[in-house]
Length: 76
Image 1 (cartoon, rainbow, N blue to C red):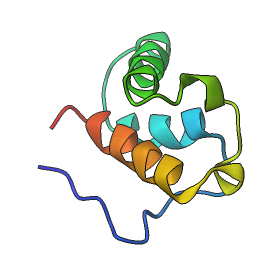
Image 2 (image 1 turned 180 degrees about the horizontal axis):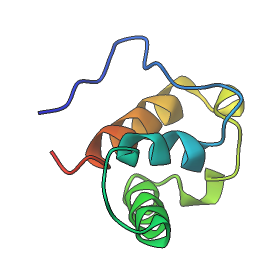
Image 3 (image 1 turned 90 degrees about the vertical axis):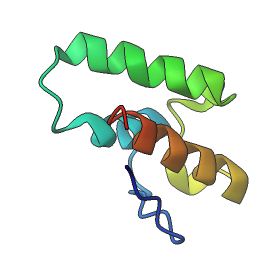
């Protein structure tokens, strides 16, 4: 099970991709594999084109989807 906080707890100075990758910090898989998984999740959530945008520049709905991708990175 994963938890998505109502305030999302994203790091505004980091990009959407970097925030997503934070959900996999505990996973023992190669960095390249984590990056591909994060990009795949962002694509499925319609955010791949915004992967390099700082979270502070995203809309509220886009931030919610980044938080969802971050949560799914842990393979719940």
